[in-house]
Length: 451
Image (cartoon, rainbow, N blue to C red; front, top):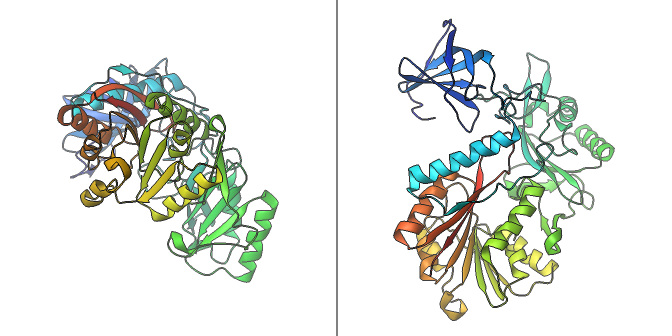
């Protein structure tokens, strides 16, 4: 939705009836009433609903759902008691098949609308478990005096308030009960009002919790944290400032390396609790395998992996090609990638740190590389801002095949337009990666080729 300025809150508005003509990826139904679009939280396409407008904007209004008189065949009963209030999910009321169809249609339309491009084919969606899939999360923490307790969980929809919740259905089974457990733990600490968040991470070998602390915990707090850790078989770390100030609760007990595996490629990748890793283990494994299939690696190929992180794509690719260059903006992540290559006995990898959003560094990442910096193929997995700066460099480096993994359809569409119209690539295929079921967040993958 756009046009967020000049918002006017509405009170005591009358109930209206309308037919829902479309559904947005974030779970709002769209109706047209007297020529103005109305976005209705929780309504689905094809339904006849009762609604009450709550906000007025220049180009559209927002409404709450009062009732449904004609129910969509795609509507399902959400299993979560706080769905509709919690901002963590927006599509639990829509069947899984319909969710993926919605995201796929949004991807195709976004590519057309922003990039004026369309893929040669739409690949089947890459999916995994719909529940208990999330192995990384940042849980908000807030002491609420009016409730006399600490709330732990995701923010409420459209609000900075923390949802009152005891468990979460999308969190990994080892984390599902953490909102309630952490609420009780933190509520008993002297620094209960000075812990704004807890980051949680599930590895193959351990579960880690990073507590952001604004005041120094007392000796009693430390003992309570130790008891909680031991009772639930966790690792606990404290973050007193930036990421560089994360320290284990107890050295030798809480600071051992975490790792996850990619069994199909016989790899183990080490990471730290706040490092970026893909949150959905099964979809990540299937995504990596699909990316390799699209790259069509051969023993003689030289491949560059831009925005490579800790080597999630670089190392599987290195198993099947002559050489891989990985480039990443974070020097710490580059060191982690190098360590992972060494851990897995891969000697055909090189990793460099470069800010790929900077024109100067984006141009220089391959300077001085043997054979003049030429590569046969490239894999991109950029942040939401996309990869616009590096695309001309790839063309100059002779890259004939690009696999682009995207966490934001709009920037993929923009970059696809550049690749096709300005750089002469053909847009061969695209598809959805259902990394975050029940949310409006959409990830995708595209294949581009050039003679």
